[in-house]
Image (cartoon, rainbow, N blue to C red; front, top):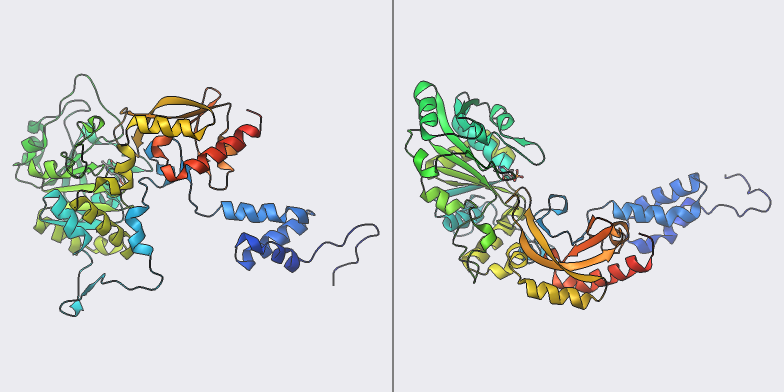
Length: 433
Ligand SMILES: *Cc1c(COP(=O)(O)O)cnc(C)c1O
């Protein structure tokens, strides 16, 4: 029994009735009970709804990306939307993930999305795992465990979130054989490594998020194609084909120089690895494409079972691959965003009706194309409005520099412009800076 409330003070509400009063939040009762209990214990029952709101805010939720960084690692890298909806549209549905519907026997989860991705890259075979780090680890574990892997000293890179080439090589059970120098590595360096020791394969790693400029040299992929050991190229970013046939206007100028899976294989790579959620514009995944025997060796390695992609990812990738094969780049959210004309962004910015319309420079982000800018446009608000914009019902993530807040519209879905306008008006009306 609770003690009677002191004279003159309202008795605190019961935890249960306070929790019930928050039901409109839509959170499960158990979580609301926790919010109510904490609020009462803190002597602040009125604060229970703020605590419930904080729980809601801690959940995975949609956000509007107005940063102008297309592949924002904190915001899930490639935006999905249209390509994923087929995978989650029906509430109760099985799939033919590992079932051959024609013959009625066990099928292969690598037959669908992976087969289409292989076709898109002009490869014999493909395998899909959880991310590109897993793809590289699996390739090295399957093809080079206990043996040497030759890597140029200029490619011993770290790519966001702890993908460090020397550590990945060690983790896979292979031995790192460094070749060449930081700035210059030649075919002869790889040749000498292969001739002098037990080297299972040569690994090229795209520098991805930085550039070495000046007195530099690296052999073309084709120069390393006949060293007598497999050549594996980790291109990371996942551009399928330099020609970008899925874009009506062909490859945009800012893509120039980015390695693509199809051309890397055609030049002589035996295997190519890349991420699903960078320039491919899909879900988090790692893709291994290339020589069928080598892909099979990867698929048979025990790590393949641990790293394999799940049904939701494979369905989304299949839908994405079909969209590429249809050459409908406009239906792939990443490519649609990346190729909108600046004039269109300017006129959208003007229609927002708050702040000042300004030309901006968007970036691909996600550890791709360092220093490359995509012409863009958006709006500038006076002062630092980032917190107020994040407080909007659907949080709007903007960029602050020099006491101004920048909202780049290239990364905003036009359907969300109304919400961006509302968030901007509220943030400006809130005063402060
Ligand atoms: C991004 C990148 C990776 C890591 O990819 P994840 O899918 O994030 O694991 C590996 N290698 C290269 C060259 C990359 O650019």
